[in-house]
Length: 360
Image (cartoon, rainbow, N blue to C red; front, side):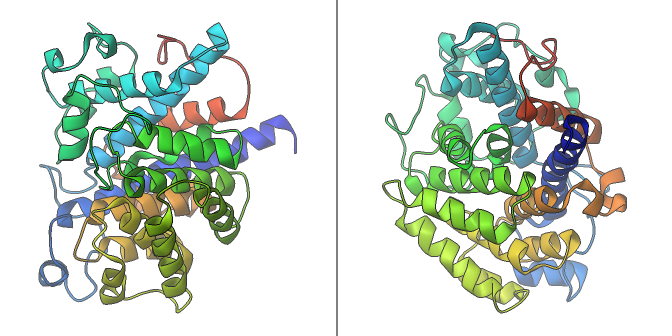
């Protein structure tokens, strides 16, 4: 395949991944804290089938899941630029700084942040996008971790959270990786900044590895098998592995009912959010069926919708996503710009828009 064709194919799938994730997020946002009974009482027996009003918009409103996904992408692109510029880069710190910039968009005082990780004014293009300066039910674990004065890593954890806040934002780590293993490592690196339990950060590695592979042409089943193998190399992998296997077994029976999905959990934790998303993606015939399956349950509907959208968008490409949802999606221009920049960063050497992604 010539370079131009390769760029077009990867860009189509990267756009599918980020736009697809944002749409899944927006479909689940209005019912994030609702029980299945409440969802059906509001929308009928079929549950959510289209955008519903949320956060002052008639439909298409994104949440912290998409906001943090965009800042994950920014962090990894800036790390790539820094490596190109200087030949050395502490990726953890660069991604951490990106999350601090997201924290600033949530109107938290920067004096709570260690001076080594704050910028005055914050640099780059993404933090200037006013459409992202809105609180959309950000997770307490992420906020508390980022407001603390300590950098986090797998070796220096200061909480034991296994919440889904790490996996929900991890897809860009897979796009920027150069191998399934590096993508896995980037996923857990970004996740451990805020989540210290293996069942919090390891699912982020699994998702990143799967995304890396399907963007480059693997089937979902092939990608899961490789990611499963990588997962087993890490301490504390057992819970996540068990839930992946349970998801595959449930998906083998066809598209699960909302009641069946709830046997995997509510999606509030990293391992069960990943499991629900994998199950819906594996069982669905198309993007629409998969994300609607993922948001109609009693649990963290926007996160499971977002992760499922990442998976199916990366697998099928932007063209498989209903245009009626793309056209009404909040922050579409910002998401599209970051998607295109991320695709370019994934494919080759050279700098990616230093105005948008400076090297510091």
